[in-house]
Image (cartoon, rainbow, N blue to C red):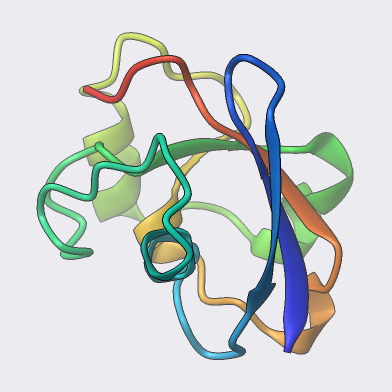
Length: 106
């Protein structure tokens, strides 16, 4: 298990126990974290699980794939640290991971 913290646009924090091997998107859905729509169910065919990874975690979560990068390009609020939560599989190295949620999902 790993602890992951999702921070809503308004600053409300949701620290949850994350099962290793699950995606951040699924962990958010399993724990009723508001702000992750996940319209495509984790198939990397939309951008409704957009998150922003804190700078200190960027190396540990890795870079987006070409497919993920293409989906992120559809989001008008994309930032340099944007990722899709469905594309980040949580491992033990992610214990303490903190991500920000945008105000809106597109």
